[in-house]
Image 1 (spheres, rainbow, N blue to C red):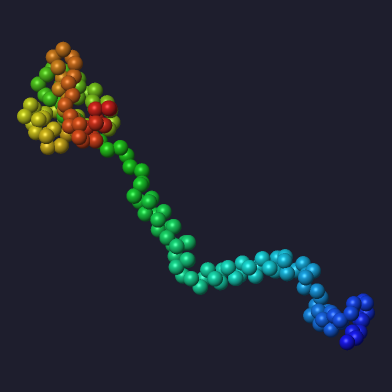
Image 2: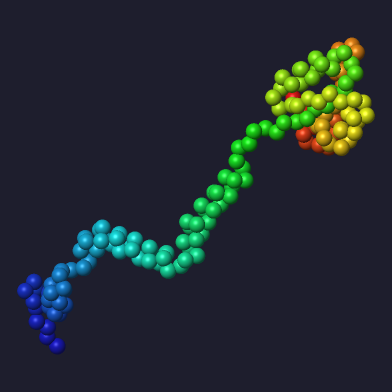
Length: 155
């Protein structure tokens, strides 16, 4: 079988070459296919694929917004809690002790009698009981199992 050579001297591919020229050139060397047009087509295909699956839209856009809103509500900034501190009444130093405790903004002092102070500490209405001593010292009574009592002791 004998093949005719085309104008470039290649044998056997004259028909293919002419078809490529009619289509607009050789596609292997076409730079437009790998440029901005290909990027736009790829982006379009990805967006269409994304839009076809509504659960992806939910998990990508709606869920993070709901999660951020929920966490913002759960962990919003609050002022420190005020802790009630009982001061046993009866000693001359009770008034000075109440003034010293009131100087701390997170502590709220209460003057209580002996039986009321014990009941308030047992019942949890006060975090700590401060008992002024005649020599000027102070005794502290608190429930070590309560977090607010430990915090009051540190203040």
